[in-house]
Length: 447
Ligand code: PA5
Image 1 (cartoon, rainbow, N blue to C red):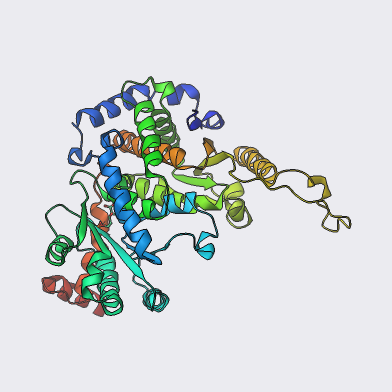
Image 2 (tube, rainbow, N blue to C red; image 1 turned 90 degrees about the horizontal axis):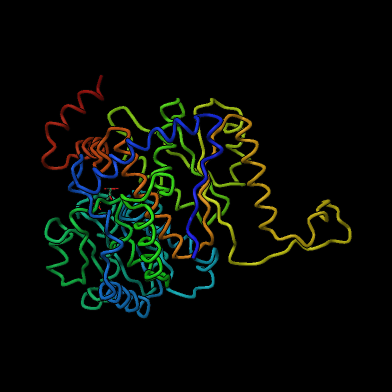
């Protein structure tokens, strides 16, 4: 079987190959620091050998819980935010039929607890009215406001609709093994639970029950997902030579570009199904690297859609960006452009060609134009969109992220900055314990 492939040649007009290769020593040191657990954040390295530590028995248990929910529910609501949501959403969207929710071949999967939109929650509640639904509630801390708020509402509705006893069978909690409000509630109520390992941070948790359970509920192949991740764990291992290790080369190239003034990385795709994969990637890199006034700013674009909006900026705006394209070599479906007798749209020159050929020429044309316009281009080629290759992509990006964070000189496994808004929000809402902060903020707002 092939592997995903990284090409970085289209960066060499901006940073030389020798500049990138010169980082091989730093990359090796960073990989060894990860491997030996001697760097900052070393209590959060559980993801490093997670794929190869997943047992068939564990996956069977996940599958059995998923099958139970699939059999009992028309809708499964996955409540979680950040790392407790984006991995599952990314994989489910990447691998499901774009219109599957209309065909209803499985429980519809909807997400909640990732925003505080009153309309969103009210409309969700309306949608769930009278439906058989279940809840997967995911929160490592068990105290995240967005998720706890949504769960409180969902639980109340489920108990009203299904009855308290039946509701317990339809709720699964994924949380810390011992701490937090969700663990306490789950124990009290007797929910089925899964543990988020202490040493796996949210954004690295997609291959724990956080991602695996919702993905299995969507009817996707979690065994293949894990098999793909295992393969990348081997390919990107600490003993793989620099030039054969895609995570090492990706980390080195993006850091060489950053040091040369390219401060923004765009993750681009040419498949709408990968939109949320880019959201997952944004969190992974943004939260891991953006600290101590350092770090590449991560943004994402869906092509060709965004070529009609951000395309102008990318082609001619400030030359501080580079792009990483995730390209899918072979679509799973076949569709050919039909011929049209009148040819009023002038598209008969495409008749008989695959839609994907048009897309690939758009991709190549974009790459050439962007490189000519001063945008270095990295490309990750994925042979096909299936669970195995998405598993490879996940681990590849995770490993590169760990290495890259150490190259940048930050702790890639903490996220102190996300507390600032929470503290202000709690103070403004008069949460008990925030009295001092509340006074300070009120005084500031009065000025
Ligand atoms: O990556 C992270 O650590 C965060 O994005 C968290 O996953 C997110 O804030 C949700 O936290 P929790 O799972 O504790 O509710």
